Image (cartoon, rainbow, N blue to C red):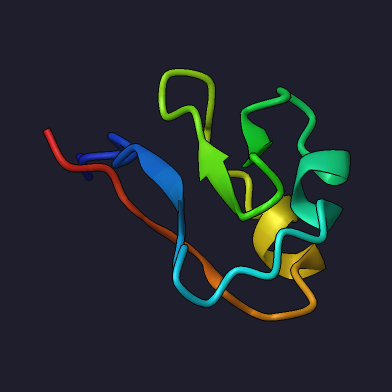
Length: 70
């Protein structure tokens, strides 16, 4: 029988390239993304489930969905 355990994934923002447009925060279904002082997006990893909606919406393409580290 195959192991079907899913590896947790989380959104990661390249903050030095983020333009703080807020598009990612608007589409996040769990409100896991906020814009920090109008400078860059931050991800609340406790809320993020790695759905990828933010990465698809980001016009600057600076969000990646990665395997969560322990």
